[in-house]
Amino acid sequence: MEKEQKRKQKEMKRFVQQINPLSVKQKAKIKGSSIWSNRSIYLMLLPALVLLGIFAYAPMYGVILAFKEYSPRAGIIGSNFIGLGNFETIFALDGFWTAFRNTIVINVLKLIFSFPASIILAVMLNAVKNKFFKNTLQTFVYLPHFVSWVVVSGLIFSLLDEKSGSIFNLFKSMGIELNVFTDGNQFLSLLVVSDIWKEVGWGAIIYLAALSGINADLYEAAEIDGANKFHQFFHITLPQLMPTISIMLILRVGGLIGGGFDQIFNLYNTTVYPVADVLDTFIYRNGIRNSQFALGTAVGLFENIANIVLLLSANRIVSFINRDDN
Image 1 (cartoon, rainbow, N blue to C red):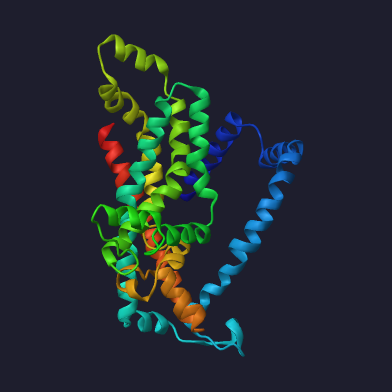
Image 2: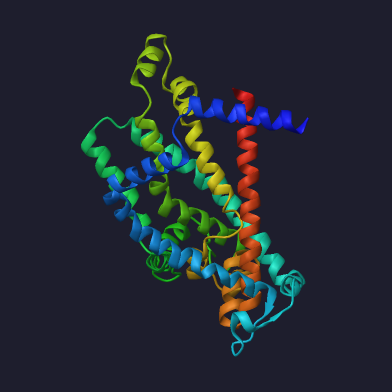
């Protein structure tokens, strides 16, 4: 029986070799020659790979700090291993769960309002026919993305100043009292609005690229059939954008637990801690400022694992929905 199986395996191997006569060595040689012929491209890629290795992969060994009782004298490797002790400590802190809740609330609000805003802006810009006006408008909506949150926060503080702030005085003249930096709900609104203002233009770029790839004949055929702009959007534009929207949504959901440190750190204060303190600011205060590096690493590791789970779950759900639609 065993001899018969070996004979069949040899026959199958000969059959595969007849179909694909190239040996492993020949294939490796061809692959090597391909790499050598494109060596200039690989050389251009090399600096990026080196930077990625130095700043992204090399520091990853520091993750073991989350499982150790860190001592500066002993170092990361020499510190005592305590298993999940740091995780038990942070899970017992009320401040951690407050920051965890605030992180989800703020990111969900941004997902609900900021994510569609980029799509709407892209559709509106795509509808502009005058090329010069369109390019000018695009430049103006892209620019805020390149402004630091430090500068943006300074601008916000000036505009909402109780004495000389133009926006504060405008709302005051209309009988609306603003307490943005002391009222939790108003502060959350400020985070969402400022995020939209700063990032909506940058987020629209990918959708504009997708819109430019839609066949214009589809719109012409729809117009002949009597479809108005509203019908064209829902029956042509939106279905054509769905693959791009799905990918961007998956990536956005994969960042729900974390992010937004620069914005919140430069705008918040102790008064709005109950609604504004997020995991990243929690890590900064406890891990860096209070020198509890092991606890900070544990929170960061928890945050990344949670984001990976959300990313994979979102990908699975979107794939399932798209499969049912097809």
